[in-house]
Image (cartoon, rainbow, N blue to C red; front, top):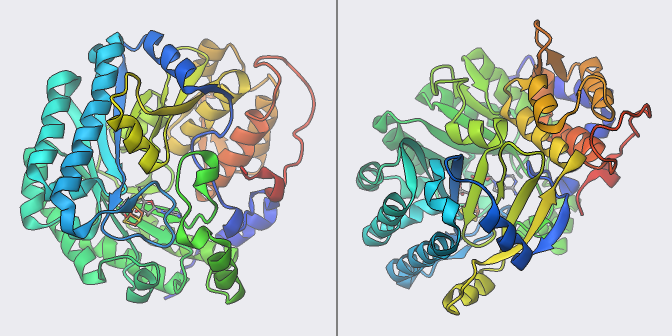
Length: 497
Ligand SMILES: C[S@@+](CC[C@H](N)C(=O)[O-])C[C@H]1O[C@@H](n2cnc3c(N)ncnc32)[C@H](O)[C@@H]1O
Ligand code: SF4
């Protein structure tokens, strides 16, 4: 079946060629790859004196283990040893507990931070359901040592085979009230080619298990994969909508090394050999075909009452209260609250009502992380930090706010940074450009801006090109009124290397 919106993204890219980024250059991340780098010691010193007591914060735990390694995946992970699963899971629960303990012992404000959400991801966070004792130990430790709010949003991320009738009971009993399951595709050959270890039937069975919980959950779907077409992706999305899935997250295939950003591993398809072979044989769909997939999917979602909040995450109208956005997204992207991250490669930030932020990056190499944690450390396994201030901080905050797809309120930037987004440069130029291109619109009362539908379609590209690069890349201190026009930016120079 063809979608009536198929040409939309092609037209958009023609009108905005600077947003046209080829698959092998596409390395977009919400987090800025900018800001002055500080070493682990300086970072931990700044961490300790940050004033987070009584403030909202969020936890992210990264379990770097998977039952299989997908060829597209450049997250930090390794294959779990099949003959030693229970022991390995216990080891990792223990490492994560010890990592939080290092902070508990030395960062006084942390016990008093209000933990409003935690997220167990990875890798495959839900593998912990295979070792009840280990999982219970981790959750009991968190509940007992931190100020976890009563209505805390507790999310568990996993793969279809992790969510069964029995395992979901344990997850609910441990307090999880939101889930995320990676399906990627319901086309057998797409997932088989990517080395996913589950069939379409298993994916649909897991969805039925999650539906029965009555809790919100998200199904991760990828587009732009080998063997996918707009028709096949549209069929997949239609099936999921008919199943009543409350939230669908659409990810365009990224095939650039996150490792170079200090936040990932190289994927199988990142290797030059595979990249070349797949590109030469035309296995990666073209940008146009890739965006036709997105068009087809979003056409179905819009027709069925789904709304993207945040951008790219399509929720049924009644899934979440307060803007229909998961708390973790609202707080981390719209409000830019602190995110405290644990596990190899995990990254977070210390933020709040001040005009500069601290980004934290853990050791990415799994072996080095383990060696650090087993060496009786007195400091956490931090690798480096970044100080985000001036325009980098403003660009990052704007980028996060755009991602959240909630109103960007002008007064907040006036109060926090002392800048007038409408009249000071470089912001005024960026805002004027985005409005002129119909990628962002102003609210009727004039007090806020939000992405338009077109802006949603290309939100990652906009975040990178306009906020991180045009604003964040402007080295001038914030709030210096200038009159230069936006420098044209080109995709080949715009991507983080
Ligand atoms: C942390 S990952 C993996 C979680 C879980 N293990 C799984 O496989 O679904 C979360 C999601 O990121 C997406 N993802 C992974 N690699 C990607 C890539 N190279 N480009 C775009 N999205 C990717 C997938 O949709 C995946 O479900
Ligand atoms: S996509 Fe998920 S299961 Fe596949 S390798 Fe990445 S983290 Fe593991």
